[in-house]
Image 1 (cartoon, one colour):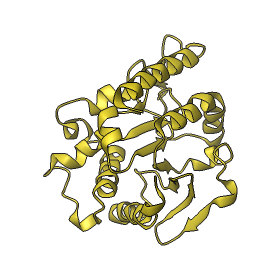
Image 2 (image 1 turned 90 degrees about the vertical axis):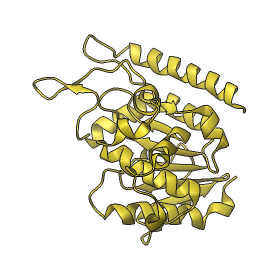
Image 3 (image 1 turned 120 degrees about the horizontal axis):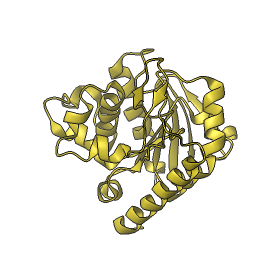
Length: 239
């Protein structure tokens, strides 16, 4: 697949997301589209990386209920001349940029430039796929039941996205258990306590179930270093 084909596939995915969301869209909420940020950068990257998280954010009403949507994550976060300007206050995207830059350049934490000193760190996010299980704006926390229901509803488009994007590295923000059976990963999952993640290698891709990038369970440098190291250990298996 070339970049033009991938761009066309992404437009189709956007249409699917909006079409699937139409039944649940109301005056207060609409889908937020996601996917491959920049087809050219994604296909040209050393490794095709996809991040899969729970749900996007938008606004909240006076009662704390999410509302908004109707926009593209790719356009809002990643299409400016300087990605850092859009993500410097976002802890999730900040950490994702360090992991992505480290994996793409195969370098350890201590050699990664500070994001505010080198625009290349934030700009590395132009090369990723950014997916959410739910395509609707969510809250600061998500119950297990709500996320399960979201996966059941959005499953067709989620699996279609992964099929189209063909990522070599898929990093789940503690949500891989929703995908494991559908992707045939249940019986081949392994635990890597040293790198703080569960993972499975299948068909030339590594699927990693890590903490959410905004986690507080381990220091940020350990989180970044663990994911960079885990991918490095299996790099020869990725095609």
